[in-house]
Amino acid sequence: MGKVKKKASIIMVNLLWGIFIIIGITYSIITGNIGEINNEILLSGSKSLDLILDIMPLLIIWMGLMEIAEKSGLINKIAHLMTPILSKIFPSIPRDHESLGYIASNIAINMAGLGSAATPFGLKAMEKLQEINNDKSKASPAMITFLVLNTSGVTIIPTTIISLRLAANSANPTMIIPTCLLATSISTISGLLLDYFIRRKNDKC
Image (cartoon, rainbow, N blue to C red; front, side, top):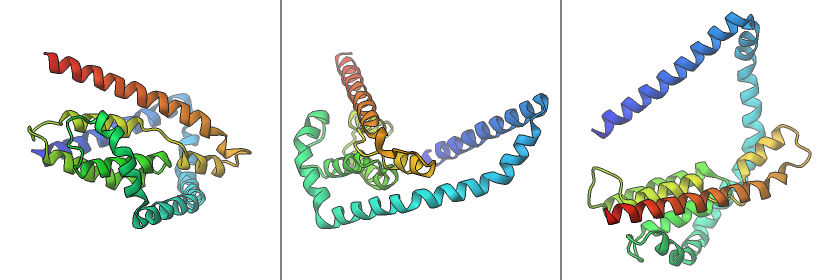
């Protein structure tokens, strides 16, 4: 059943992108801007490669630092420090359960703005949460809360955004840090509060 749903999701995404492309090309033909489409097709490959080469060094540095932090045990120490807080956010998870360590690691790496590096920890956390899920056919409250936290997570250093600003020759690429910190803090608090109130409402029903 899971494979069928995954395949259906992929087909749906491909269908949506196909529709967007057809609409864009049709609109360009109607408005007489078909030349812009040709230019983008010819130049997009070069632009994409340049962007990757500009971003890659900074991402490699941060991912390397995260690897060192993991191997040295720093991530585990962060997880240990965050366990009391996470136990309040995830009351259904036992305090000594290893999923809390993966959740803490995922949060710590996301704070550094390295979503791709945090993904393996997130997947491992979900796997461990599924093991203690009483109803395997649907997500548990802890899994939903983690998804909210992972999606809205606080970002202290938005590494990817800084890289993009550097690639665009920004005069001050790190100027975005306070704004990102404020925005992600508000989204995290709002998401967790909404999750909490919905969870309480469902418990009373």
